[in-house]
Image (tube, rainbow, N blue to C red; front, side, top):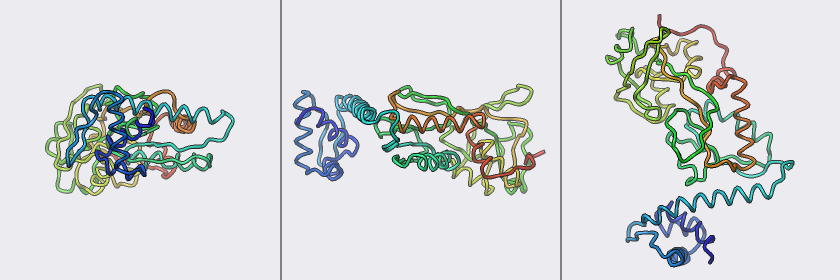
Amino acid sequence: MDLLSLLPVFIRVAQTGSFTRTADSLGLSRPVVTRSIQSLEKELGVRLFYRSTRSVTLTAEGRELLDQAEDLMLRTRRLVESLHRSPGEPLKGRIRISSSGIIAWAFLQQIVTDFLAENPGVSIELITADRDMNIPGEGIDLAFKVGDRLKADVIARRIGVVRNILCASPSYFRGRPVPGEPDDLRDHVALVNLYLGERFRLTNSKGETRIIEMKGRYLSSNSLLIFNACLHGAGIAMLPYEFALPYMARGELLQVLPDWEADKYGFYALYYDTSLSRPARRFLEKVTGVLQTVGGRVYDIRVRAKDRLVGSGKIE
């Protein structure tokens, strides 16, 4: 075996932590996997894994190789795709896309459906995860993320914006006082979205600012769970304005502290390098084109498509 042919086996062992699971997933025998890793270690002159009867873990040299090998495999795949397709040919191939569950549900799913209808030769794997993905390590072509906490090892292109407000259901305020100032929030139940964080800066129309800590007993990184808990009266949550707007219009949610808003978050497209495959590049162009029609307001897509709004839903 040559060096390049051994790298996919090495990457899979690193991902699974098991020679047996690697053999099963690649359709190889376990001895072939073992010999492949031994040959790679001999070729490089370093030990790549610590082996025990229960686990297989990377050495420091193994971790360094994994970073480089994942990068090489990703670049190789994209090079092959670009060489096999001329610009005028119909798009073909598979795109792996990741986002939080709420972004996939409220924004991406319609774009994915439309893109697939327009490009019959393309398939899309939409992965929903309320965490930061290892883009090269997990083979992600494009990731979409709300928030300004970004990793330095990926390209982050700001393509939209999310406006954030505090909301609660009317049932939550039965028997409770309505907050009049940000400091009043300490006497209320907070629903904490760990994906966005617990610390927010609020600003009012006069330019005054307050820093609040959303401390609560219900914490989740899943935005949909936080939203659903808020809708059912479990507490006060920070929600995207356009997403909450239809529910406020129907009186199902109320805006808390209507004179105060949190900082706007950027909405980013993330990818590992500029050599995106043609299908991934075209999908990103479609997403940015859709956002341009609504001034970059991510959740405004769902509002315009699904609802006709009347009223403000604010607590006066």
